[in-house]
Amino acid sequence: MMHISLLEQSNVGPGEDSVDGSPLDITTIALLIEHLGRQRDLNGALRLLSLVDEMKLGYTPEIIAHMISVCSRCGNQEVAFDLFARLLFDLPPGRRKRAFKLLRRFGWERHPGDLKDLKPINVHPSVYILNALGMLALRKQGLPAVFWLLELMEATQVTPDDDTARRILHHLNRYQYIEPNVLIAILYRFMSYTSVRGRMRLANIAFHTLLKDHKMASSPRAGWKASATYLSQSRSPDSETHRDYLVKQTFRALGGEQDIKEMKSMPLRAILSSITDSGASQDHATYSLRMFYYARVEKNPKAVEDLYRRMLAVNLQPNAYHIAALIDAYILTGQIEKAREMFSVALSDGIKPQCVLYTMLICAYGDLGEPEKGLAFFRKMLEDEVMRLLGGIS
Image 1: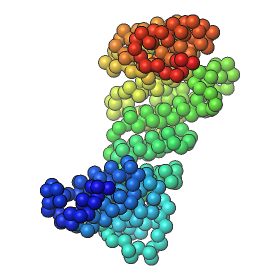
Image 2: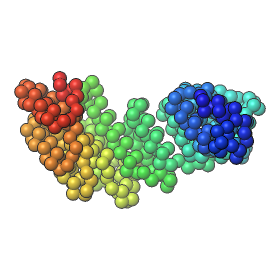
Image 3: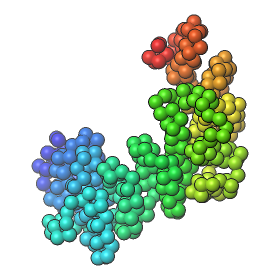
Image 4: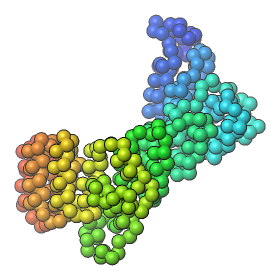
């Protein structure tokens, strides 16, 4: 608030000095609006926005995008929609009418004859601004907002970028349950844009959704260990569902065990082919997902260990997630001593010890009815000066 008061008291124009002698520019206001957004202070951000007009500083895409993000965090979509609508008056009439119509689908409450008080802003809509508006709409409207956003981008002649795809896929994967096929179809559409280049990173989100959906369908109220037990004991080979088949094809294709051209899902086939054709390397996240697939779905510890050694061979340093998958694979198949052996191997390979890895083994000993071994391993954790977790103590 002190910074806002100083700016309001300065009453200087563009390029002039503020009260403390430093030059006042639009970047200062943009940074303050971004800060107030993190504080969820909509009134403060609106006061700063009014200074842009009063001081005739001129709007920038950053100012508008930050302001829309503030509105999103504060739950005030109408202010955000009004601000964005002020960018649309310079569009050709047909595209402007279409853009206004799409804003109303998002929830904008203004009618066509109620726009006289909106003062046009001479800034063309950018992908930076539309990404911020898209996240606001996605939180309010859910999945339909994805398709409306892409239509709005088309109407304003803005091309989606990596950040558009990443934000949408991440939100859908984390905060809203949708069928994996739907998320894969959205990813497939994004990959049709030449401006979307982070293909491996984006595909990892889809792979994670497939695994998460498979787990929830197998045992929605239990952890992965119970899920793996359910899969091994309650299903026969003949009971494989479409979900099982999709997951298996995807992860086996990533390992070269499945011919991509023979995959039944056309979007997945296209996505995997695009990744292969681009020469993109599998990254830490891809290896982590593949290792958890073989550990928890196929219960194949050898495959997990092979992937771990493959990472070392290609100079991709494993982290705690990869070691957790490796330990998990042996614990789920009842080979706890082998799990402990691989834990020691990982430490000798230079992997930093994490308390969660100790906890996995301590809990495994408890499940086997060998609390003495669990206690001994807990003492080892203390000797190694690794921070304790409640899970390890219990």
